[in-house]
Image 1 (cartoon, one colour):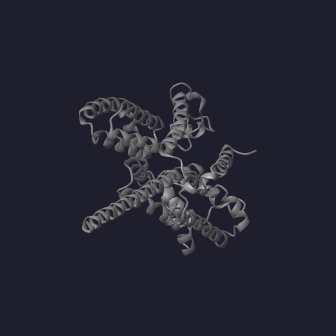
Image 2 (cartoon, one colour):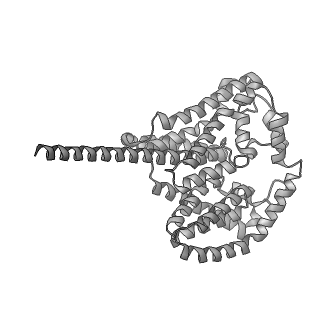
Image 3 (cartoon, one colour):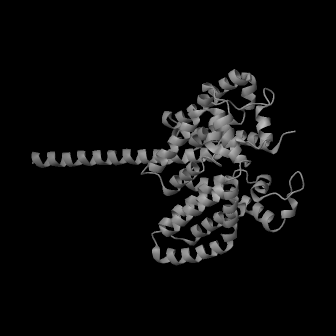
Length: 386
């Protein structure tokens, strides 16, 4: 029987294939070119080089690696998005459908049916664990529409945009994932206070801020206390993962540069042993990805994020999405899962979407400027002839 995770991966592959088939007649307008696809090629190169490490260090055969890495090939989602080239409106609309589904499921869990969700030993699960069970494994993706509406709200303080911002922030408050909640709260707060319509934004910001503080104060205090205790706790999973990556992991140069590979239980018990100790690569973001797949893909991630943040042609919400990924690069920003790949793929697509639009606008500006010069030159020639 296939697990839910396997079924989700299969459906993603079907979705990617459908994009290439349905939109094959629009190939003249797609964004696929050497510049946009080369980072994906570098990511795939990093994946295949890590297979070499897995073979040398753990004797994991290449055929076994090809099977074990089956979800990693979903990086072709980037190419599918560049090929289909959805517009901004349709992309945000689809994310809103996913977001509403997550919000409804999480709301029902939080306020009506918490007793339905218990762990293997009968203990109550925390919010983030329940969310994983319900539907929202890819909840960080929803930071994209959140920051999109923040962007709109900064330019034109409309009720619809404020509603979506508050709804998504309320959702992250229900999840109580510290990495997502803290970063999102800061960026949302910044968006409110930097809105161009100060006369409307300031009183609304004060009112909503007081309401948010009233309902979230205890949650933030608890999360802060939990964070403090975990930092001082040597047995905390994330602390153990950091210690393992930097102190106890394989220090072979091959592993440092190319990673030790995505290991199968058929080749070694290394991964299962670490998981039994509470050590997961997904807990430490880019570092966990580096440990498995090497430094090359991580360089790709960081370079695209840095380019986005410092690009003048990127809208605020794309920059905010990149900043969120970067700030969470040692926590939830792990792209070795299907949901993580989709998250970064959407960000990747938006980066090249706006970069291409900026290039086209520059070309158009140059063309118009050149045309005007020729026109003026012809006028001058005509005057001289007369």
